[in-house]
Length: 283
Image 1: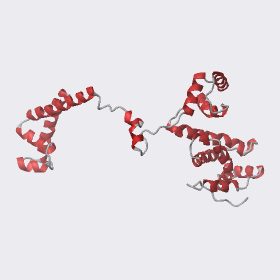
Image 2 (image 1 turned 60 degrees about the vertical axis):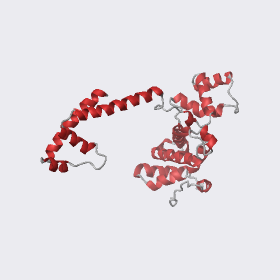
Image 3 (image 1 turned 180 degrees about the vertical axis):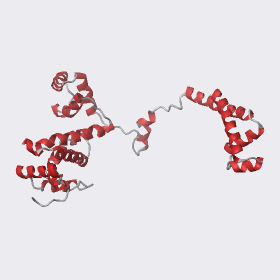
Image 4 (image 1 turned 90 degrees about the vertical axis):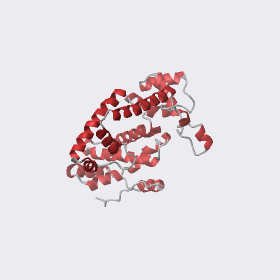
């Protein structure tokens, strides 16, 4: 068996170097592939798994290249495809008489598909199995970049088993473009950015009036609640919770009133309970 190789990783700014590296890796013969897969299955040989993965990295690069039209980084697509390849290697059965590359293509594409659905324009636009199939096939089934005519829509819908209106909706989404929410650095861009037109839920007149009235009621309610307390309880609450400076501690108040700190705590708790009841009635 050949000596284990170092696993290459796509690095920022060196994708071309990574692709050249994986393309230089030797391909495995069918006998070598079966031998490595058997070692992995029977003995859990990690080195065998690494060699199986490395010899098929070029396949991932080729498959990932077919998904560049979605505007996602090629390196990210390759990384996701590599995850699918490793899953395929883990599940590969050498006794079935199928080459690893044929088995791995499904896993590689599945992982790339999942990545695209989660990240393309930050919107998960395909949910059902039929919609996912439509998402990944519509771009290739269109003859050119022009809008589909009714006959083409019906034909594609029949082939993919979806409704014609779903084809039209998906074509619209695929043909759309992203619009920055907050515009660019240019002042004019910011002035006309979508964020400038979003309504402020707190600026609606009835909302402003309601908040003003509530604040007034709460303020007057707090004054009334404090007024309902006896002098000692009111002083304790004010110095514990309503003081502009440092609030008094239980021990400081206990020394001042000549009682225990626990007694101050009990007075405070009883006063707060009474005030909460009055404030709740106001709200």
